[in-house]
Length: 402
Image (tube, rainbow, N blue to C red; front, side, top):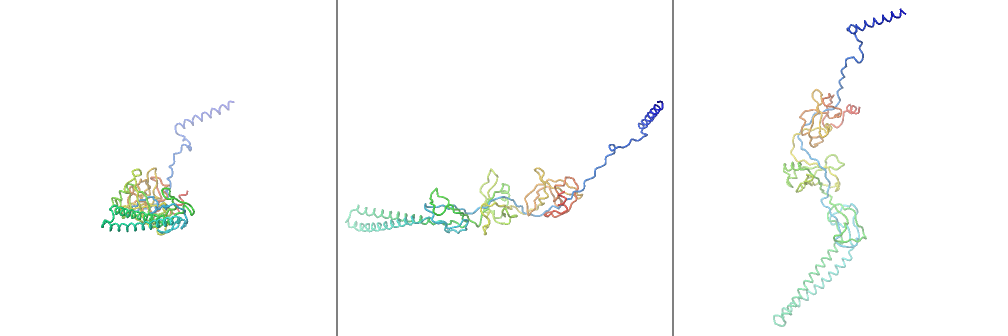
């Protein structure tokens, strides 16, 4: 018992001595993970991107619009007389020339009416001839006082009446002839005919309720109609295109929905006489050749017009432009490969490159591929490419998928 107590007292004495030495700093405290000084984080590696120098050159700015192909002539063919459709002379969608037969209305009733009118005309001519003889005779007799003045007056009146009846009969013949002519319905213009809306054997009426038999639209040339905004109109006016004067100096190109760019060239024909105050636009009409009939009325058309003199402009590829809410921006790379955020104001596309109106200067270098992986003030590993290069370098293409 005494031996155990002696050991406990000895351990306590040793612990007290050690505690004093620890408080005095003579014994160092063991370092743990929580008391180690922090290690600085490693800097991220440079981001691989492709860069290009902005392009500066003289360009003619183009304004782009959407429009529709329209036929210059469009005619709804309607009957001018009532009758039975006897024959249809065309196939649906056929190209026809002005004067080609389209429909025939049964001509027999109208031929009979013409024959009757001609017979009435012949009778009126005979009566007029007889009235002329009687008038001449009475003029000779009145000189010798063989007849009374009233007899001469009656003969004169009979002649005038016969003459009027002949003119009425001649007018009836002309009307009957016109009606007979209207039985042959011909193409009013050269163009492409639609389908026959009413076929042979059907009765058609003339007048306000006359039905549309078919439609003919001209094919070559065609209109392309579109609307331009007020600022564009004012720009054209400043360069001499006011009203319909000087518009021939405004170049215009057009492409269909399945065509790249604007391969078709035409000319402006007219500007409307007023702006629509609701939309702030004015209607414009351009003319394009259509020798092969490819431009079908109603087709969607991409239109571009150039309304100014060539000017020096900064151009970039659209791939280099990012969107930040309602702003457009690019990443400019300096000599130390540091990327900087730069807001830009954009213009139209010219020859595949976007005009930058403000925000960039000549000879500046910007990121064109890998923009989505670059943050402001980050360091990049640039690979220089041409501004209008379409292919992404293979190393950047693989990096963008990581």
